[in-house]
Image 1 (spheres, rainbow, N blue to C red):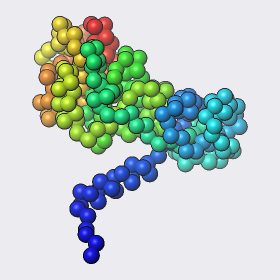
Image 2 (cartoon, rainbow, N blue to C red; image 1 turned 60 degrees about the vertical axis):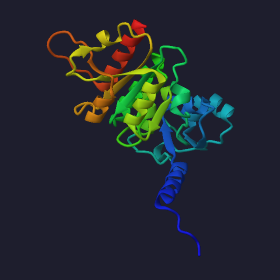
Image 3 (tube, one colour; image 1 turned 90 degrees about the vertical axis):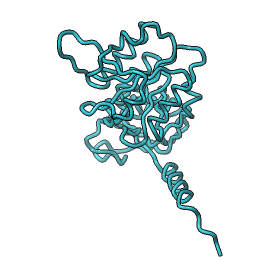
Length: 260
């Protein structure tokens, strides 16, 4: 009689199959070009109009892919008709950046990491990836659940950064924060109600810093706040100030970079 597999083994196998089957459709000339130029990308299907093919001819030839030429009035890629695809769409596998310790280990440098708590808007995450790339962050880290997955909209907003800036999806945010602390990171949670400012918190800190940002509105969860080393706010002129989460990430990364 065949022995029945434990429930956790069955679930693990299901998750592995689901992950293997998952694909993403990237769209837009810049997003498709960047993905075609990225040797880490597993590329599956390329759909372009004649005009887009002419604009991407060099990278298409270098990639070795055989594109499907599509009528612009009946674009063949299965993406939202409202998407501004510019006649180019590429089906890919999500990027595998590797594990947290390999990417984020400070190695004696003033490393920077962004952690996101329930930031689900792909446009915000895309913009954060752009800022993270510009300011040299090791990674943007977010949990698998309640965060923006890798999508065409995210890639388009990221304007190429998705192909170059590690975006790590992890199981548990608090556990990951603890792992970063063990690597030597100071965990600073951005909270508009905090007593101290980010500027004050980073004075004299020459080590690795992880900036933790929550969704607009609810902000950081209680568990996330408790796991931070300190809660800080971005100092604002006057008695009131509020920033979009992607703007807060950019300002925070700049502040930390200027300090270091």
